[in-house]
Image (cartoon, rainbow, N blue to C red; front, top):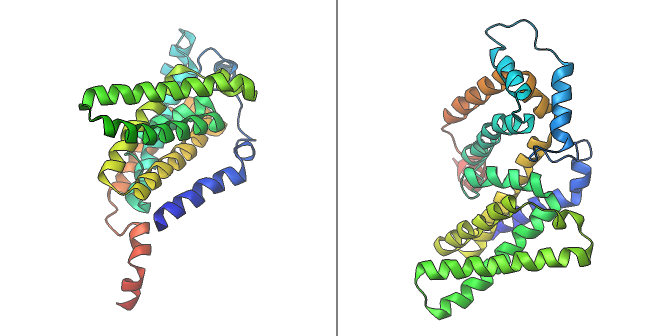
Length: 273
């Protein structure tokens, strides 16, 4: 119960601070879209900052510039370079701090979905999917169906709930929900299966805590993906970003002490000793 309360406090703090304030210094352009002004902005910035003479420490920067000139979207390259970084940070938060979440891949992919949908719209759909998944599970349990048909019906109910949200968006005048892409929605739908698996193997409160921790990790990771400084660093210094990511993972992997959550849990015993 304490973990659930802590997770709720963290996520509510994020929204009390207000995503608008947190993202006030960030570009409002969706970096996941290759046909928006974000791609032109990154390309313009790249043209304004020449790479200098070709050498061993900037050969990748030259390759990136050549690929972009040949038509590869700058947004895609930035996301590919930053995705291992946010995965590393999520891994570190689990290995050192002790946060759980739905693995490493799910929070990282969810962060991309939140960047694409927007924090508010993505959170609304995420909470709606979890609520419908819980409600649908209780209904389908009474039908006593086999696993595969039950899963198909669960996806049908979740799809209907998302359809309801999209149809209600014009009435609520939520422009971000009306223009949402299908791929982030599919990513959010996949989370329902992870949530139900977690609920089946743990207590309901622990499952909610894990889901909220996943959302918090995705929110922080999305902030990094939207950070203009990191986007420019990925384009101008890709070699440095790659090396630092590898070194960071090696350092984190060498850590063998107590996690922060474990230290807080066993602190009375440690202090007595």
